[in-house]
Each structure stands twice: as structure tokens, then as C-alpha cells.
Length: 255
Image (cartoon, rainbow, N blue to C red; front, top):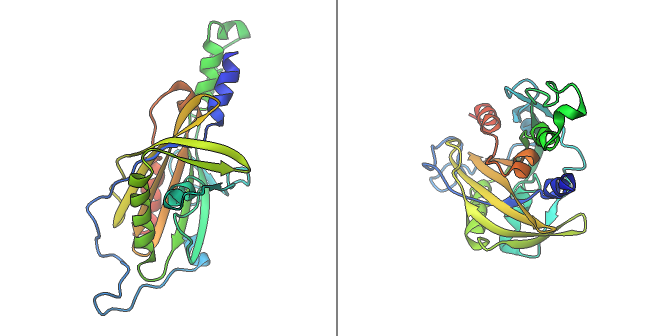
């Protein structure tokens, strides 16, 4: 049944990974320590909670706590691919002095069944199309993490290195269930922060493949990590990316 296949595709939460950097450091709160200035010190959790996006700050999105079902980490035995697995788990790419997170869910503009008066109106594949459209919304985990010294720059560099080293994919586990990423590729990062890395990863499960997206942006010694999934777009094989509205709103709070 096609809806069963649809559910299988929806279960794919990880995929194609891409990394790239923008124009480089803008000098705002960098790691420090190499020019005679004191090395940067990490922000605390309380400070990060004031800086992370909140409800009403991302147009077209609801922002709230990350549910436990989405907070289950992906693990991998590959040390060089671990930064990618962490970002795709809604975590910072490397252990940080402090961190906090939020979930930004795109508003559904219109219920796809609003125009239907009966199940007959949804015949000939229209019902399945309506289900896909109802799930066609970006769900983005935002994680803010802070590091001492040049820790943020090193953590971001580890993501860039992982994108190159893990281009052929890697194996992982989530809640004891095995998963396979068949491809990691470079994608365009947002023009935000001091430097950034974006990636797309392809996950394969039960014969179906689907992409998920991650991005890490450095703002001085703080990293903003983003992980976006759009199940409706996966099912419809429609292109999507890390939510630009979320990146823009979060970057504005870190200037």
C-alpha cells in the first residue's frame, strides 16, 4: 500500500551532508589568544538561553522545547564522521562548555483537506497527496553551544573535515536501531556569522533513501547548529534545506 511506503520514507530521518564556508572571520568575538588578547571564554547555559530563538521571533514558525523523541542521539563508531552524527542529532559537533536547544516547526498554511467535502473528493491519489502536503513543513532543531579559546573554530573545522572524509557515507545507530548514510555531500551555507558549514546527508532504510540537512555557523566562540527534516518533502521527493528563516532569526540574536 502506498501509504505504508510513505510511512517508511517518513521514518528516514538522516541523509545527504554538505559543508562549505563563507567569507571567513569578521572579527566579532573570535577565539582570541593569538594576538596578545585574552583567549575567549565560553558563555554559560543561562546566557545561551537568553540568546537562543524563542516563540514569536521566527516568522512563520512555532518555537518550543525539543521533545524527548527528537533528542535521541545518533552514534557511530567512525570518529571522523562523529561530528556529522552529532549535528544530525541536534547536538553541537563537539562537546561544549555549555549548550541549549529549541525546536522550530514551520506553520502549516492550509489544511490540505479544507477543500474536500468527502473521501470521494480525495480519490485517485488525492488523499495520499493531501497527506504529503500536510507533512510538508520544516522541523528544525537549533542548538547553541559555547567554547573556551579556539574551541568553536576547531569544532566547526571538524565538521568541514567530516564532510570530506565521509563523502561515501557511514553507519550509525539511533536508539539501538542501525542506520546507514550512503552519501555525504557539500551544500551552500547561509551567509551568516564568522564562518559556516552546511551539509546534506542521504540515509537509506528499508530500501528507501531520503535526505536530511545540517548546518553549523560560528559566531565568535559560540556555535549555532541546525538540523532540519521535512518528511512531506522527503515523500514527495521535493527539494528542501535548513530553514533559512530560522538561521536568519538566530543569527540576528547573536550579532
